[in-house]
Image (cartoon, rainbow, N blue to C red):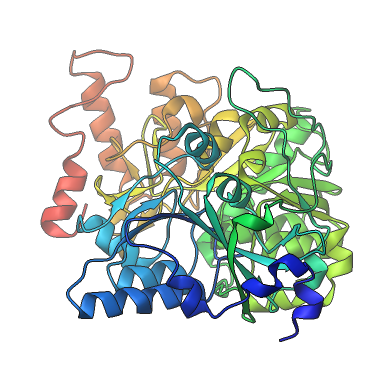
Length: 503
């Protein structure tokens, strides 16, 4: 690998070293901020070398653990490798790794699940403690030491600003054409010194194209040549297509009623096959000149940019299949004019989300009959991934939509239940619920009308009669009529599943 094209700063040329030597600079007990957001832009070599370093310590009977802070989820080379050797003491703010998930749910790894827009502010305020080291993947380093961001920005600016020391991974496997796609805002501040964020359109740039890092902070530069590890998305199944169709029909109705403009409002979409199915439906649908202001840009949005249905998109990271990643690299000049990647404190900022009027579309694990949504915990106490940015967008968007198939585990679990086993989004932040069965528009409805809509339009027919029965008996119980519940039965469905494997 040539250092000439990617590491152009002479001050840092003498800090190039192996991943193993760089990993040895990270001490046990350190708080380490690493780049990475939904499997994009994470360091590829240093975490794996650090896992080997930890394994060597354990072989000598020595404990070695660190706390890992990121933008969001990463990949097996980071979360998986460090979790396998029991190297993570505490993890924040979002993860999706199966080994991490198991250890968190076994009580062997501490985990802070937090709204993604809050992370930078909490770090600045010292709520997580002192950040010791940042490990950041970049595309390259300019002559004057500016850093060319990679395929995600996430919390990288905050980690570099807050950390005492910085390790850089310069990845030749990321397209050099990413240079110029980023917008890094250096005007954020803590109260009472905050100023309005100067953005009124999704494609506006108001920051820098580069990350800034004093060269004296950089203690190591490691060269890599590896792609982001993202999985292929499954083709939309029948349930995903039906959910997408319900949502597209709803959008068309809202346009006809003049509640939405003909090109809708800026779109935000969570990660997953249902989200991609919705994007595919929009790509084939009647809406043109669409825009996006979101966290993550998936295959579906890339397809919409290519077709012209989507004029431009703002995000903090990519989450692309290998084929879509190749498409991005092959046509990087085209996409660089239509995509802007921002820090996650800006991509998820409530002020901007409210101003632009975002249509927020996110997945969920379950919803109850009044519209409370659980998006993080299975059966109330076992974390799946985390809240991510869904709360940032649901609470502040113009429309908040939550989507899921109506059943799981082959029909053993209903996604519509009397009472959710864990609340991430209260009924006050949930406007639209969609399953393959239908769409419930909850806007302007009091609790009992919300319940009837959700049961009749979203619940699976196998569970609908039992939900009706629960609701009717709760209404007739004499215990209160605003939000009727039978407290001795409200979580009985979850308890029954834990006991029998069937709700």
